[in-house]
Amino acid sequence: MLRKSSYLSVFISWLILLFFFSCSPKISNKIVHNKTKNVIIDSLPNTIISDTVKKVNLVEKHIIETGDKQFHKYLPLLAGKNVALAANQTSVIDSVHLLDFLLSRNINVVKIFALEHGFRGTVDRGEHFSAETDKKTGIPIIAVYGKNRKPKAEQLADIDIVIFDIQDVGVRFYTYISSMYLLMEACAENHKKFMILDRPNPLGFYVDGPVLKPQFKSFVGMLPIPVVHGLTLGEAALMINGEHWLKNGLQCDLTIIKAKNYKHSDFWYLPIKPSPNLPNDQAILLYPSLCFFEATEISIGRGTKFPFQVIAYPDVSFGTFSFIPKDIPGMQMNPVQEGKKCYGIDLRKTENVRFTLKYLIDFYNKFPDKSKFITRKRWFNLLAGNSELYNQIMSGMSEEAIRKTWQKDLNAYKEIRNKYLLYIDFE
Image (cartoon, rainbow, N blue to C red; front, side):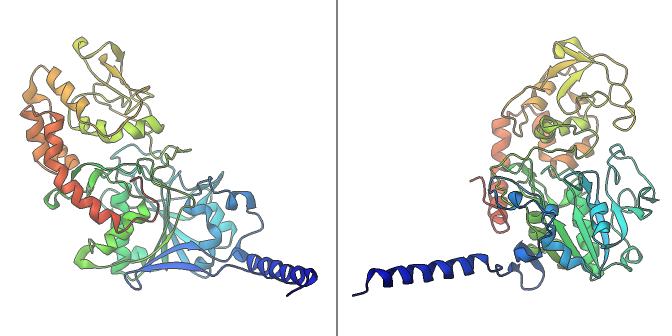
C-alpha cells in the first residue's frame, strides 16, 4: 500500500504532465475533401499567432471571427506567393482593410479583382466600370463584372493564388456568389490556387424558395440552388467542387479558412453594408422577398435612404405610407417611379422576416391591369430560376399552393447541402 507521500508524488507528476501537454503546440488540423482539391483549415499551431492578436478574442467561444481574422492560419500559406485579391469595402480586419494588412505583412499582392459595385462598393447596381488603380497603394484593379466577368488567362498569368474575401448575403441572385463561381472556374482552368476567407451568412439560419433550373442559368443565378441557400461562400465553393459544377467537371484547388465560433443558427449583424442598396440588416432580411419587384414598376425604395424596406406605387389605394424616389449619387440613379409620389407599406420595423411571396401576391392583386404587373418577364424568370413562378403569380395561385410545387426540389437540395456544411446547422 502506498503511503500518503507516495500518493502526493504521483499526483504532482500527473499535474506536471498535464501542464506540459496543455502548453505544447497543437497539431495542425486540416480536413481534406475529394483527395487533393479542397483543404479546410480549422486550426494550426498557436505558435504561429502574431503577438499583436488579442488573446482574449481567440479563446472566448461566443465571439464569432471571420476567416480574414484567422491570419495566423493563412499568412504562412501566402509567403513568397504572387497574390490577387478579390475584395471590396467589407474586406476589413477590425478597422484595417485586408489589402493594407497583407501589404504590411510583406505579402506580394500584385492585383485586385473588383466585383459588382467596385472595389470600394460605391458603384450602382448593373453599372459597368473599367480597370483602374487603387489610389492608396497603386495596385492595379481589374473589373470582373460587365463584359469581363471571368478573368482571362493573361490576367492570371502572373499570380499563384486568388484570395476571395467578400461579405455575401446568402441569396442566389446576389451576384457575389456568381463571381466566386467564375473566379473558381478561371483558376481551375489555369491551374491557380483559390483561397476563401470565409464569413458567416446573415441569412444562413434557413433555406427556402424555388431551386434554379439549368436552362435559367445566368449571372443572377449560376447554381442550381434555392433563393435562400443557407450556405457560407466557403460551403458553396465546396459544393461547386464536390458536385463538379464548373465547366467540364473541373475542380478548383481550393483552401478555405473557416470562420471561428459560427453556427448557422446565429444571426450575423453586418458592420459594413455589402452594397449601396443594402444599407442595414433589415434590408438584407427583406431582400430575397422584395427583389422580385425589380421586374415590375413597383418601387422598393430605390432612390430613398431605405431601399429594400418599403413597397409602393403611384396610387393611393396601395397604402398610406408615401415617399418620392429621386437620384442619390453613389447609391441609386434613375430609380423606378423617379419624381412620383408613391404609396404603399413601410417594412422597416417588421419582425421575424423570412422569404415570402405575400408582398408580391398582395401588390399583384391590387394592381389595376394585372397583365401589366410584371413588365420584364424574362428578368422575373431569371430571378425565379424558372418560368413556373411567373405563370403561378399571373394565374392567382396562393403562396401555400406555390410553395408545394417547389418543395420536392428544395428537399433534394437540402440533402446535397448537408454534405458540404462546415458549421453546425440550424436544424
